Length: 466
Image (cartoon, rainbow, N blue to C red; front, top):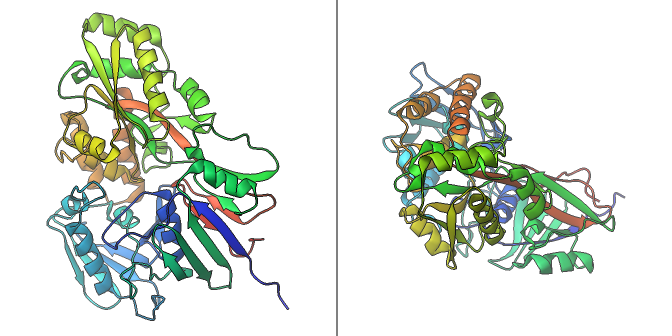
């Protein structure tokens, strides 16, 4: 008789699946979604692979796509998954708002785009202009159905939900009989304590601890650098940082290696441009972080002759350690001759709304979570799109590069063209580039069969769990 599959006890920051029309980059929720649901397409460290949609092709104009579902996809309630389910799902997303009450960017991406189920297994997408990033956008969409309680917990993935209390606990059953008991423990200190005292097998998002733990051999440890960018917006509309030279000088003033050592205990890598090393186009960009050169920074600021106060805005969290990062930036900029005042925001949702409304002072600490280079450029950099997070950068030469990359269909050529965009933004920074932190997970000693991806999602290998 084969041994009984294990039950794993997991504690993480949140337990929720969110309504079907809500897209998220939250690691807790994505871990749950990846167990219960399938994305339309899969993101594999910048490469797009089949998932619920098994294959796709486009015509010679680049404006008509056909996406084909994998063989016989069934939801856990027995409903046959069809192309019409996908059409309805995307329509709902385009009509919804995000957690801050702001309209999702997908409505802008898909303005003038037609989604039609031409059969039960084939989706046709017609765009007004070539849109090479369509499969990558689809990697963010996890198809689901609602249960009898209105919860969006019915998917086509490897696990089915057997119990669910939103915000508290979920139990999952996998096809091989393995079970997962996942509990929401919002406080990172309590998550670590639950692991240490033997009441959990896995504790997630331990990088949220104010002081990162000593990683002793008594426990197992997983960490992977996140594709999230911890950054600070520079106000390109008014004040000092309208100047491209001033934006470069601010980046030269920061010792990002020291920031990664002191604030992240080495569990981070310095940022070089607006996206991470795992985004489309980054390898092709061939860039390194802006070097630490305070003398050059001071010389630039002296030549500009700015004498006013710089207002540095920061939240208390999101990104983690934001107050310490603000103090680090203030010290670095004051060492090269600027006067800096920190304005701490206590209400994180209101802070996001203010940044979206361009009330950002001169510098505003934020994070950039999309794993799509297309999304980061179009939501935060493009002066043609002027998305909610755009902060006034207007560079016609860069805009032409973005448009060309957006409209390129061949994956290798599109990556090269996005690389040109990222290289340009390294040479003339739009933001204060800071770091890409690691996701940190602790496990009971000897637990195997787990791995983290660069989105911070925890994966479970069927044959190795013990």
